[in-house]
Amino acid sequence: MASRWHPTEGSEASRQELESMACVLEGRHGAYAAEVAEFFATAHVISEDADRSRAWEQVAELVRLREIRRCAGIAR
Image: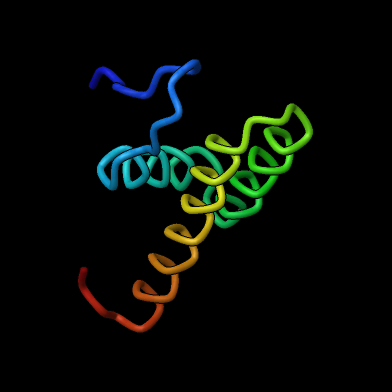
């Protein structure tokens, strides 16, 4: 899937892009996926990229929400 998110544009990631990022992190990092997303968010704060930092924060929240739903047995 091609991303519409260009580094020089001030647009936000779509819900679908955030979900995809969350899925990839969960697949690669399992229980540490939210922490990895938080790491990326912090790295982008340091590099003064607020849009990407915000996107990674949203991914971390999505990962945590998905984990809560899985543990509770709730489908999307």
